[in-house]
Amino acid sequence: MNYKKTTLKNGLRVITVPMKDTQTVTVVIMVGVGSRYETEKEAGISHFIEHMFFKGTQKRPNTLAISEELDAIGGEYNAFTSKDRTGYYAKVDCKHIETALDVVSDIFLNSKIEEKEIEKEKGTIIQEINMYEDNPMAKISNVFENLLFGGNPLGREIIGYKKTVFSFTRPNFLEYMRRFYVANDTVIAVAGKIEEKKIIRQIESYFSGMVKGQKPNFEKFKSNQKEPELKIKFKKTDQTHLMVGARAYPEGHKDRFALSLLGVILGGNMSSRLFLEVREKRGLAYYVSTGGDSYKECGYIATQAGVEHKNLKTALEVILGEYKKIAATGVSEKELKKAKEYIKGKSVMSLEASDEVAMFFIDQELRRKKILTVKEIFAKIDRVTTGDILRVARDVFQKNKLNLALIGPHRNDKFILNVLKKY
Image 1 (cartoon, rainbow, N blue to C red):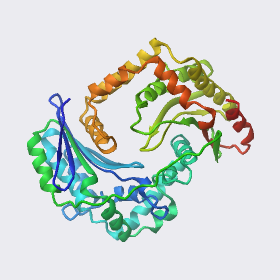
Image 2: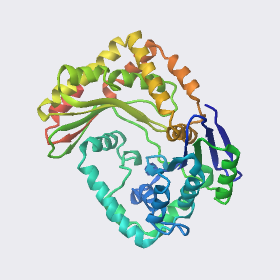
Image 3: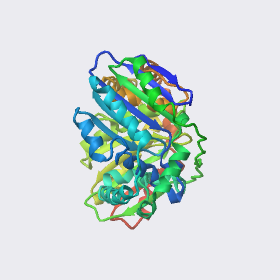
Image 4: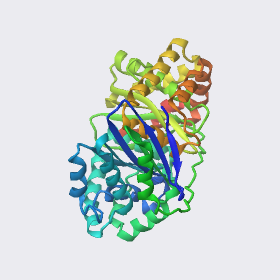
């Protein structure tokens, strides 16, 4: 899959990926700022700005004008905010590429950010906060990252606090965008059935006036963890939701592919060790999965599950037992080969879609030093050995790196903490 990178005079980067065997096109605009760049008083403003971009421009004065134009061509469109980036996208039939590009560019460059719309949207975001509070399966990862990253902005929820959401005014948005929505920290990816040269010219015509800026540094996180740690969010729930894992590697680490394979073997699919042990053999959980996340200077691998309150100790012991086992005896060649083929198969299937292709390239351009092609990534996966898996498991699954987050009606943390300390 060939791609082309074009850098405009103002530093804005454009990634174009022609795809012959599709009838769709996806346009993604991503800026390298998210919640970790916010001060405590700004908590949630990155996410709030994402909402405001759909409230109207001079050309399209309100939400209906934006949504109606994309709905009329059957487009899929949305936006998202993470801890280190914010993205806006539209996916359409290739014959409607000019409309998609015009709409997404317009909302990104020309949103009015009106005070009256800000006040209305505060209510929407407060309801979004309430929605997550009522969904412990989604909330548990926030509790886990809060435990992991403590007082650092990485440990704060992307959506912010109710008090900060209520406090925002139009000047707050404009000042934040002036600082962070700059050309040299913005990437546009267009993937699908496209005329590459024409698309690049159109993007240049829209974005050549976007200004450069100096992107401030974020507050770096440094761990000083010396023993297992626990965080309980008390809530009267029907299940205990748990997330247990260990500190691991930053996003560009040489062992990131071995860590991904370790996650697949432990809890990445329905034939994984933890799925079989926790769900199939013992019936302790409906869902159990292992995965992780990484940032510029840190990362983690963790297992998430929902269990009956009375089965918390047993489930935790089973999960930690599998961590200990894989760190002691490693994996077989057969297991490793299966995990490699699983990752490659999932990747190949997802990359048949223009939106997945656009995200694949833009995410790497924004977060990595170099874009790796699918072929290059597969080659790195293939080079991982059983020895690498054992080495990484031993490095990561150490007692002093363990962290456990819980949501449920639990107040006695001593017996739970003892399970971790017996690891």
